[in-house]
Image (cartoon, rainbow, N blue to C red; front, side, top):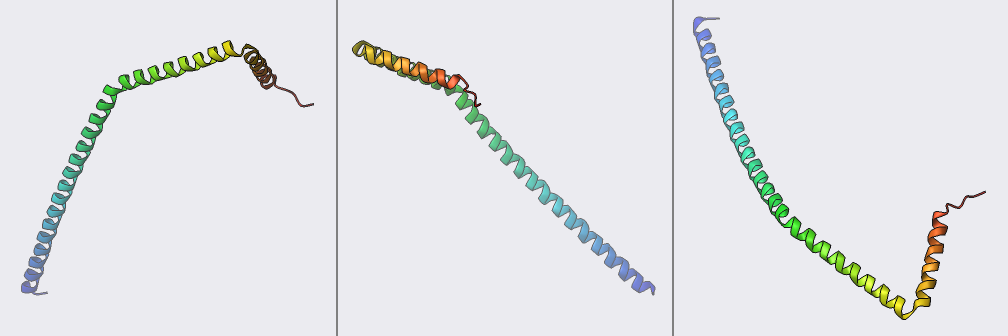
Length: 114
């Protein structure tokens, strides 16, 4: 191989190495930008989720109170209906109580198969 060919080959190798270094640097920059975007997106999503969680935590006690009041109202209305039915039809209420007791006793007796 002549000196001129060796110099040309060395220059080509140096040029190729320079191009590879530039491509490597460009890829690193693109990866860094992508990571920064991903971090920003994750931070934004976290902030949004944290704000929603805080909002729900603030209204939870009020919602729980409303549900409790509604449940109490339904229970009171049911009790009032039962009381009225028992007062208006005591024998029917007694019969229903006996029938219910029989059914519950039968279900809980655990009948054995022989």
